[in-house]
Image (cartoon, rainbow, N blue to C red; front, side):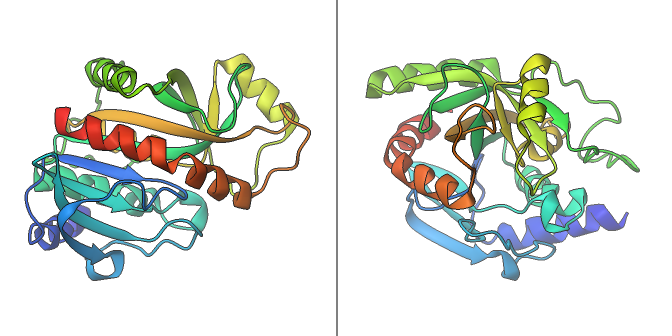
Length: 269
């Protein structure tokens, strides 16, 4: 099967960097928050099948190194469905990590805050998600070596990993909230009416990523932890117009806290 072959070729290229069991995907404006020691890195362009990100704030690099004595893979930047890529392209990195032997995936993102009480700069653990992308990365022939045709999605974001994250945050004096993330196609931001509808559906956060990767990871048997940085209040929640510059600026402002959290948390996953 051609898609499985693409995944295997990417995993083979990545195997030259090491054999990590934990991977961290860094979202918009977050590429520099999680430094590694003894780092080996490859640009996306050097990895078979990896498209190059086109969005500012997504550097497009995979590195393997050490954090707290543990070997970790870090993906700096991601690609999105709205850039014109297929969902197979969007989730190819995660599937390659699964074939590499990664068992725990940490997904970070920038999001708009929907729920009352959320503020720009809040760090929020994802407890669940709502997929409004209009597609699913598992559509089409099932890749049996990766996972089953009908994977269970009762607990996409691992309860045990969230418990550890809360413990680490408390030790660091950081406040972590929890919420449901809703994914839209983008790239336009949502209208105020859409935000009201999303709130009625039970969403606390809105963004344009993460959900395809989480679905593909669970299909492959990986445990998933999601951490969202609220970079702005969603349309209609705040009267201010939305901009990607604000997303990047807020991400950078909270980069220190997220970096501290990841550096203390990842070795314990």
